[in-house]
Image 1 (cartoon, one colour):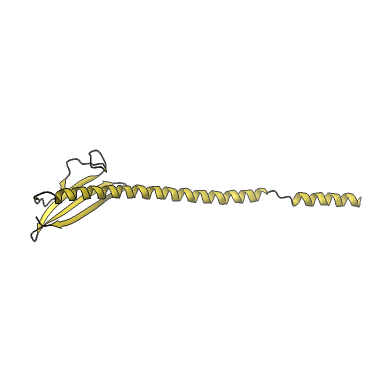
Image 2 (image 1 turned 135 degrees about the vertical axis):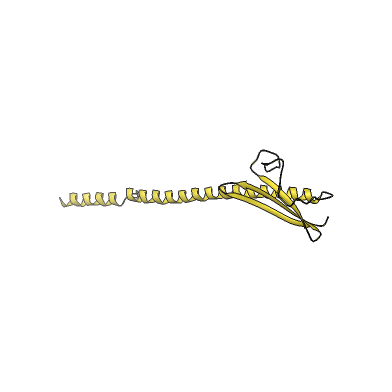
Length: 138
């Protein structure tokens, strides 16, 4: 009788100390993994938005630089006082018509110098713009 009791105790001890996982341990591990994966997804979405914004700002800066170089290379510059809209508006990043960028410029004169200002605007959630200014003697 005593032998049977000891055998049963040994079996119970072996079953309890087996190397398997309990349900609670599995649930905790899954919760930790889920939190980690959600964080990774949020960071990835944020990086994608930042990348898109950077591409749009770079495209707008390229459009302002292109127009500024064009105006600087003209033999003469006519003063405009007010902003003049690009005839191709809205523009794509490559300067062709049909995009999301609106380019305008103005030329003023002060102290014998021409002041050039080129502005490119676009709308995401809010209106954004890139402005480039310089002065030249012509």
